[in-house]
Image 1 (tube, helix red, strand yellow):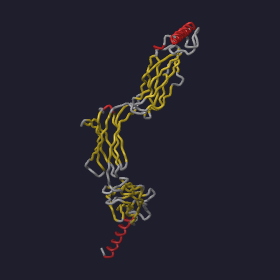
Image 2 (cartoon, rainbow, N blue to C red; image 1 turned 180 degrees about the horizontal axis):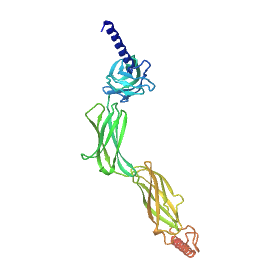
Image 3 (cartoon, one colour; image 1 turned 180 degrees about the vertical axis):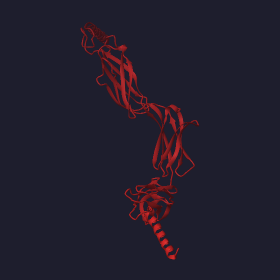
Image 4 (cartoon, rainbow, N blue to C red; image 1 turned 30 degrees about the vertical axis):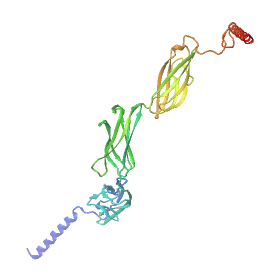
Length: 390
């Protein structure tokens, strides 16, 4: 083959290769692809950071849903004057994609902080983008002042103990438990967690498992960023007592025909004040108390007198008396049966002040008896007069 022929063959081969390359699919991003990266919400945990305690800032980095290309996220950092923390090589964000980047830092001193979050990366065309967003923090001195208190309580007529743990300091109580102890033994326990600074958490214990007497209420807990547990305790003298316990005492009954008067004391034997105390006849056919007798409030360990008048259609031997009241925001109703049989047999127990038939206005004494009494008094007066004259 001549030199000219070989040169021509070489040119033809080159043209064929060029044609194949031009026909192959394009894998590189084109110039019209765009990305739009923004920094959304920046979460701060804990919400009230303190010195010498780990604070985590988590920004959300998003590529717009309207983007036509992906963005390469190369770096996200937080800074306050100087760089506090950085994360690198975070991958690509397609259209509508988001990623959360947690970055931690421990502050040495308290005070106001302006933290700037920066996200750096490359656009589809290879150009570099940098977006920033700031968040403001107040860093408090790390302190702890945990207190526990306890009280006996009554819920729905059942007694128990309510224990409250309060963190007056700035460091959150991460987890722990409150224990009830009697004579050195744990009789019940309840978990607690996530008690922020200046916040409280209350747990309750059912009185069925709690013995009467002195109780030790102890909290064992772990603070945020600490591994060793702490404890604090208080004592409580526990004497189970119903919050609501009204009783009718010193009952006396009188009757006039089929009208019965029931008198006595409404005594509060419970552990809370009884409010809106109303003494009334319970629903029964043929009995009426015309709305009952309103007592009002009876403080704990106190009593109030009442005087209930009940009208019956016919003589009865017992009257159901109902006591309605409220205690600790709950409504209660108790019914007692009062025996009135001793006041019956159709007799009138109360004296009628009006004179009976054939009597006098002076208590119903007969006229003859009154006259004899007057003559006797006159005779005694005459004898005494003669004796003094002799």
